[in-house]
Image 1 (tube, rainbow, N blue to C red):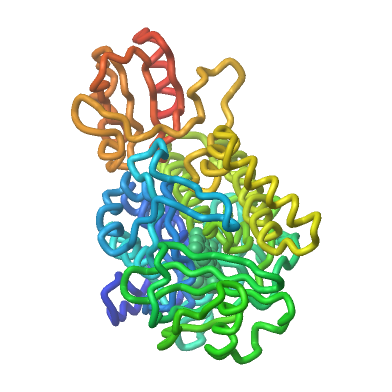
Image 2: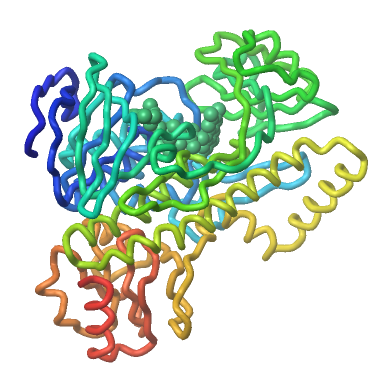
Length: 500
Ligand SMILES: Cc1cc2nc3c(=O)[nH]c(=O)nc-3n(C[C@H](O)[C@H](O)[C@H](O)COP(=O)(O)OP(=O)(O)OC[C@H]3O[C@@H](n4cnc5c(N)ncnc54)[C@H](O)[C@@H]3O)c2cc1C
C-alpha cells in the first residue's frame, strides 16, 4: 500500500503505527474498530482481495475480560463458512437447552442447523480467531490510532486520526466502515443520531469460581426485586449477571463480590460460594439504533449501529451478521462486479433485523423485570403459550439464534429468494464448505458451463439428492435467486445479474 510509513512491527499483527501523510488508497476500505464486527469485516474484505486498513485506538492486546459470552447458531454457521467454527467450538461449551423464567425450556437440539446448540465462549476467544484470520488475509492493522473525524467527497473518504504519540494524520480510502462500538466516532462524524433510551441501570457482572456446582447448565431466576443469571464458561469460571431494582447507582460506583453474592442469594436462594472473581463490572443498558446504516461512502455496523440489553445474547452475534452482509457487497462493488446500489441493500436488509433485535431483547428484559401482579400474569401466560404453541416458539427461537431471519425478495421472485440456506449436502461436499472461498455458489441439477470464466467469484455445485430446484446462494449464505426449472438461459441471466 502506498504512502504509509513507519512500520513498527511491535506485535504479531500487520501493524503500522505511523499516521503521517495522506494516503490515496482508491479501491480500499478503512474499517474503524477491531472488535468482533470490524475483525470479521476486515478479514472478509482482505480475503476477497480488497486492501483494508483496520484502525483501532487501543494498543494491540486482546483483553481477557469478556463482555459477550454467547455465540448463536447463525453466527456459528457464518464462522463455518469461513472455516473457523470448529476451532471456536473446541474452546467453548455447547448448550442445547435454555430455561426462561423458570417455566419455559427452549430446546435447541431440534434447530434446523448443523449447530443445534449455542456456544458459551468468551468474546476474546471469538476475537482471537477472527484476528488471526484477518492477519493471515493481509489486513493492515493500525493500533493506538484514534479516528477523530472524516470528510467524504465524490471519490473517497479522508479519515482524520490521532496516532500513537498523539500526532495528527489522515488516511484515505474509497469506503469507510465504522465498527467502532457504542460511542462511535464515525457515526458522529457523519452526523447520524443514535436515538433511544436507557433500559436498565446498574446491572452487575462478574466472572467467578463457585464452591458448589449449580447442577444445571444455565441458571436464571427472578425473585422480588432481584434477578440473577449464571452460565458456565467451561474453564472453571461462571459468568454471573445480576440486577437489583433497589440499587439504581451509576456505573462508576465501586462494586464488590459481596453485592453480587447478595443479589444471587435473593434471586437464586444461594450464592454457590462465589469466589476468585477475575472480572467485575457494573453497566447500564441502552436501546438505540441509527436511522441509516449508510451515509454516502460511510457505513456503520455492530454496536455503532445498534445497542440493546445483553438479554438473549444478541450484540456480538448481530454485529457479526452485519459484517457478513456488508463485506461481500463492498468487495463486489470495489472489484467492479456490481453497481453501487447493491450497497443500499445493506441498510434495507440489516436495519429491520437490528430493529427486531432491539424489540426481542427489550421484551426479555421487561419480562424479567416484571413485578406487578398483571405483569407477572402476562409473563406466565406468555411462557405457557410459547411452551405449547410450536410455531410461536420456533419464531422466538429463530430470532434468538439468528437462523429465523430472511431478507426481502423482489415481487414475483421464487419463494426461497432472500431466505437463509442451511448446510445442505452437495455432490462434492456440503454448502458451508463450498462457501469458504467467499464466492457465490450455484447449486443446479444440470451441467452449467457458465462457471468457467467466473471461478474467482462462483462455485458450481450439484445437489447430493435428486432435487430439481436451481439455487444461487450469496456469499453470506442467503438465496440470491432460485427457480424450479434449470433453464440454461434463465440461469445465465441470473448469474450475470448477481455474480457479474
Ligand atoms: C456486559 C456485556 C455482556 C454482553 N453479553 C453479550 C452476549 O452474551 N452475546 C452477545 O452477542 N453480545 C453481548 N454483549 C454485547 C457485545 O459485547 C457487543 O455487542 C460487541 O462487542 C460489539 O462488537 P463491535 O465490534 O460492534 O463493537 P466493540 O466490541 O465495542 O468494538 C469497537 C472497537 O472500536 C474501537 N474504537 C472505538 N472508537 C474508536 C475510534 N474513535 N478510533 C479507533 N477505534 C475506536 C474500540 O476500542 C473497540 O475495540 C455484551 C455486552 C456487554 C457490555
